Image 1 (cartoon, rainbow, N blue to C red):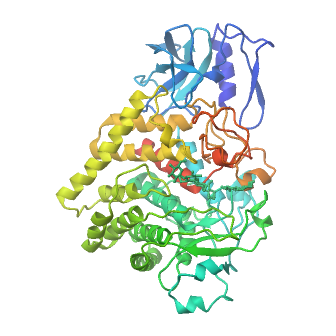
Image 2: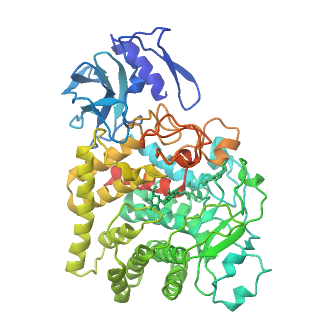
Amino acid sequence: MNHTNIRTIFAFAFSSQLVLSACGSSSTNNIDGESNIVGESATTMSSDRIAMSQVGFLPDSEKVALIPDVPVSQFQIFSIAEGEVVFEGELTDAKEWQVAKGESYKVADFSALNSTGELILRIDGVEDKAFQINQNAYDKLHDASLKSFYFNRASTDITEEYGGAWARAAGHLDEKVNYHASALKGSTNKDSSNSKDRLFIASKGWYDAGDYGKYVVNSGIATYTLLAAFQHHPNFYQNRNINIPESDNGIPDLLDEINWNLEWLEKMQADDGSVYHKLTTLKWPGKEMPHQDKRARYVIGKSTSAALDFAAVMAMASRVYGHQSDTYLTKSQQWLKQATRAYQWAKANSDLPYVQPDDVKSGEYGDDFFHDEFSWAAAELFLATNDTRYLDDFAQYQQPFTVPSWQHVSALGVISLLAAETNTLDEALYQQLRKTLLDTADVYVSQYQESAFRVPMVADDFVWGSNSAALNKAIVLMQAYRLTGNAEYKTVASSLMTYVLGKNPTGYSFVTGFGEKPAMLPHHRASQSDRVTRPIPGMLVGGPQNGQQDGCDYPSGEPALSYADTWCSYSTNEVAINWNAPLVYVLASLIAD
Ligand code: G3I
Ligand code: 9MR
C-alpha cells in the first residue's frame, strides 16, 4: 500500500477533523500515477501542505514537521499500534525561511519520540498526517539509490531480470571513439600525436546524468563518494544484494557497481600519463533512449583537474579492492601505477584548465584552480603508498575545508586521511585536520539552529545541484559524528536527509519513486523516453536554485522555492551521479553508523 493511501485511510479512521468536500479538494499523484482526492475545507488545511519527510524517519534521527502558520500552538502524535497519543508538543512561533520568503511555518519537533511503527501527526484545523518511524525506513530507498547507478550503465543491456519495467537495450558501446583534436593538443606523447586515425576504446562507465556523456572530473567525486561509503561501512555492504548481474560473484554489490565505472575510467589515460577530460558527443543527445543516440563519440580535451581526480580515485580504488580477490589484487596494482603516473603528469602540467572547444556543446566541468585537487590526490596517494613525499605535497596544497563538490574537493582528502584505519599521520597533523573538519561541522550545526526550516542550508548552497550540497554537508556532519560520537552531528545530518525527502517548502520528495509526491519528470533522457510513466526509482534530482539557467517556468524566484518538476528544468530537475552518490553514502551512514 502506498503512503498516500495509508494516509487517506488513517485520516478517515482517526480524524474527526477531516472534511471531504468537493469545494477546496485537491488531488495528488502517487508514484503509480493514480490520483487520490484529499479533502480540504475552509476550516481544514490539507496535510499536503505539511512539509516533512515523506519516507518516514529512523528512530534516532531528527523528526520535524513544518506547518504553514496555523492559529494553534499544540500538536499530538498518535500511535496506531498503541491506540493512544504517545507524544504532545508545542508548535513554535511561525517564521519565514530566509531563502523561501512568502510563507511562514511553525515547527513541530518530535525528535524525542521513541515509539516506532505507524503514527499520526494531529493538529487542530489540519488534516491528519500519517508517517512511520522505523529502523528499516530507509532500506529500500538506499538500495534503489545505489541501483540507479546500474540503470545508468553505458555499453550494456539492462535486462528485465535486473531492470524490471526499465529494461532497455545497450547504448554507447564506445568501442570506436574518435579523438577530438583537443585531446591530442598538449600531449607530450608522440605515439598519440601520430594516432589521429586510431580509434579509442573506452566502453562501460556510467552516464553522467540525464545526458549520455562520461566525464572524468565528475566521475572523480562520484566514485570517491561510493568508495568511501564502502570503506566506512564494510559490514553494511558485505551481503547487501541489489540484484545486478554480478550479485552472485562473492564481491559486495557496491564494489561490483563501482567497478563498472572504474573499468571505463582506467581507459581514459593516455600513454604519457595524462588523462582525457571527457568522452561525449559534440552536441547534446536528443530526448531518446541510449541505443537511439547514434552520434559519433569523442574523447575530448585534457586537464590538470581530470588527471588529479583520476589519480585520487585510482589510488583509493587500489586500496579498497586490493584484498577482494586475486584478480583485484592485480587490478589494484595496475590502478596504483596509473594513479602515480597521472599525478606525475599533473605535477609537470600543473596549470592546464579544460577549455571547451568551439565545436563542443556537452558539459564542461571547467575549473582553473587545482590546489584542492592536488591536495586530494596527494592524500589518496599517501594512503595507498605510505610515501611521505605525498604528505608533504598535501601540506603544501591544502585548502580551506569547504562543502565537497565536483569543483571543490579539498574536503575529500581530509575525510580520507581522518578515516584511515591505520593512521600514520603525525599527531599534530591529525589534530589539525580533525579540528578543521569539526569547525566546519559546527558551522553547519549553527546554521541548523538558526534556520526557520530546521535545515543547515544557506543562500550559498542553492546552486545547480543544491540537493548534493545538502547531502555533502551531511557527509561532513557524519564524519564529525564518527570522530566524536556526539549525537548532535548525526541529528543535524539526518535533518538534511529529511529535507530532500520532503521537509522542504516545495512539497516534493526529491528522490524519484519515494514519497507521496516525488519528482516524476526528471531531466533524464532514459526515464523520459522509455514509455514507462514512472521514472527510474532512487534518483536524486538537482533541487531548487534560482539561477534558472534553462529559462523554464518556475513558481518562485526564491532560492529554495525555485524548482520545477519538468523535463524543461535541467537546472533543477536533472539527475547526476555526483548527486546520487552522497544520497547512497548518507543513507548507509545514517543506517549503519
Ligand atoms: O564558480 C561560480 C562561483 O564562483 C559563483 O559564486 C557561483 C554563483 O552561482 O557560480 C559558480 O559557477 C557555477 C558552476 O556550476 C560551479 O558551481 C555556475 O553558475 C553553474 O551554472 C554551474 O553549473 C554546472 C552545470 O553543469 C552547468 O555547467 C553544475 O555545477 C554541474 O553539476 C552541471 O553538470 C552537468 C554537466 O555539465 C553535463 N551533464 C549533466 C550535469 C548535471 O546537470
Ligand atoms: O540535456 C542537457 C543536460 O544534460 C545538461 O546538464 C544541460 C547543461 O547545459 O544542457 C541540457 O541540454 C540543453 C541545452 O543546454 C540547451 N538546449 C536544450 C537542451 C535540453 O533539452
